[in-house]
Figure 1 (cartoon, rainbow, N blue to C red):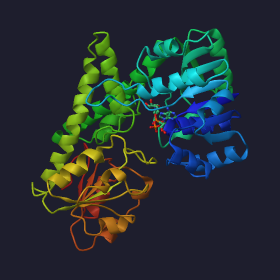
Figure 2 (cartoon, rainbow, N blue to C red; figure 1 turned 180 degrees about the horizontal axis):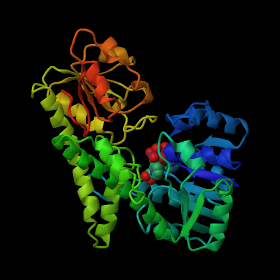
Figure 3 (cartoon, protein in one colour; figure 1 turned 30 degrees about the horizontal axis):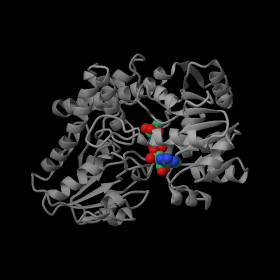
Length: 433
Ligand code: NAD
């Protein structure tokens, strides 16, 4: 089949490349010229393991193309995917659909032939209906919802082996075409699930809100563990072994961040508000997650005995999770400016390089070498659990000072830290100091 992906970001680029890889011809469109230029010169604008190679292979096979020419890409395709961003409106819980509607209008204006329009962007319940009204034009278009569930860092695997493929429509013809599109994955065991369009839109928000709730729940239990000398990992194992609960998303850590959970939990609350339904559990999750960031800062205050001024604090990893360069809603964006305000001297190392977000901050330095970043640290904060941090030998890196480590991901073994005489703090585990 011939596909047009509008929006070549984390979702559009990965799913477009993977669709090409299962045999379709894919035109990826973006309005960002430098992004498309970069892709056409063989470089991925985002960090996602395995993506560079897959892009190159499929471009070479002439199944994958990158362009800024929407009209051309649209008119060569049978199915068009909307993959643009859906952020929250400024200072509001509700979802900004400007980019989605702009694309819908462009599709209507530029399309010369019949098409299926698929929303892959995460959109509030009823958006498909609004798009349908917007593009209404001699019944040329069928609007389908196909929410995306891939996780950054594992995105290619998630595309190839999805837990489920959700398609929302009231057209049997559209279900048939979408099933054909995904057939290579369905043949390998992916569950193909159909519902109406509103249902598919809500499945995406409800999934993300549920996962955010699970994380927030274990984070609160971790707080309790810290006060009662219990290891939260025992609790995760103990409750996660119950098949009704499940073991995933029960790892205590910092607050959840990233490009989806924070905005989608808020988005869901605003969907509820529009129909006067109080989603009180989701509201509590949002509140708890926000206060968690403050709690982490207070813990740092306590570690320093309230004397943060002039202390050298090093962040290992600043992205919201490993194996991605995505900084959206990363907890580091909250913590670093506040530590600087308390007059700490901050430096950071991240495997995906320097971040624009911290460029303008005074006393915040990027190091491209992890050893140099840590050398004179008063406190090391393990913020993102990249594999390369697992084997760091802190005793070798820091020689002149007592090593103090705050591990926000429980990456290290408490007993080992004690043996190495490292002053070690982690999340929801009994203190060893
Ligand atoms: P992104 O910001 O990385 O990418 C969006 C892209 O759309 C950008 O490159 C932007 O330049 C482009 N764009 C905007 N308007 C355009 C237009 N008129 N024409 C052409 N291109 C245009 O966003 P993302 O992370 O890929 O997310 C996209 C959607 O998918 C969102 O709704 C998000 O909630 C959802 N989603 C994201 C993830 C994730 O892990 N990132 C996972 C599942 C679902």
